[in-house]
Image (tube, rainbow, N blue to C red; front, side):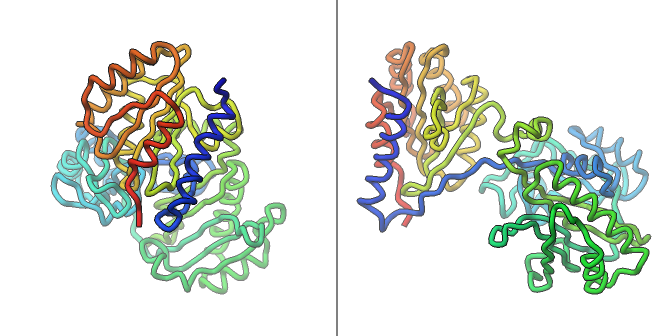
Length: 408
C-alpha cells in the first residue's frame, strides 16, 4: 500500500542514489524557499502606514490614466514599471529600447511613455532573457535629490542579533561602496539608543535638526520591522531632497515565512505564488516540481507544494514561472487526484502547455487517482514535445532525474 511517507522516502532515495552515483556532476542539492515579494507601490503603502516619508504616488494601468495622474501631480514625475525584478533603471523595453524608470515633464509625455511600457516586456539583469510583461506603472512626483543614503535592518545570523546597516552612498552606488557600509548591532527591546544616534550623526555628518528626522525614521523602521515580522527592511535610496527633507524613494522587504498566519493581510499581496506552490531542487541542474494532493506529512512539505484548484489558468501561471526561470532544466508533475478527476487535470496540462507553445525542457507527468488512465491517455495523445507520462511514482522520479540535463 502506498502511503505519503513511502512516497517521500521513494523520491528521496531516487535523488540521493543519483547524487551519490554521479556526485562530481551535480550542483548542491538546495531547496528554494518561497519568498514574499512586494511590488514597489505595495512597499510604499507599507512605509506610509508606518509614517516613513514617501512621495505621493498612484498606480495606473492605462496611458490615459498616466496622463491624468501627472496632470494631478502638476510637475515632473517618475514613471516606474511594476515588476518583481531589480535593475529596472538599467533595463530595456522591447518596444522602444528605453528603461523601466523614466522622468516625464508633462501629461502628454507621460501618455507617450506609458503607451510604450504597458503591455510590453522589460528585460533587466534580474529578469529572464525575454523579460517580464509590464501591466502596471507606479507614478510619483519627482524629488530633487541632494544626497542618497542607504538604511537597512536585518538579522546577523552569526551573532543572532538584529543589525542596522547605513551608508552615505545609497542608490545604485551601494554595491560598489560596500566598504562605506556601517554595521550597528542593537537589541529589539532597547531599540535605537542615544549611542547609535551619536555614531550615525558623527559618521554621516547630519546636523542636530536632521538627526531628529533620521531618529524618527529609524524608530518607525524598527516598529515596522517588529510588527510585520520582517527579516529585511531596506530603504534604498533614502534621499535628502533639495529642500532638506528626508524621503524614501524605494524599499525592499523580506518577511518571516513562518509568520504567514500572523500577517495574513501582508501575505495576501503575494502575486507570484497565490493558489499553488512550487519548490525547486538542485539536481543535475535544477528540477521544477508541481504537485497536488501531497502535503500530508512533514516530509512531503519539504519536497512538494500544493495548489487548491488545478485549472488551465493556475497551471499556465505555474508553467510561466518555470519557463521564465532559466535555471529550470526539467519538470516533474506529480498529481494524486481524489475529488478532482485526473482527466480534467490532464486537459488543463495539455491546454496550458499548448498555450505556451509546448515545453522547452523535459517534462514527466505522473497521475494517480480518479480517471488516471483516461488522463494519461489524453496526455499521450497530445503528442506535445518533451512531454512523457509515467504512471508509477518511482519510475517517474527516475525518468525525470535521467532526462534532466547535467550542470557541470
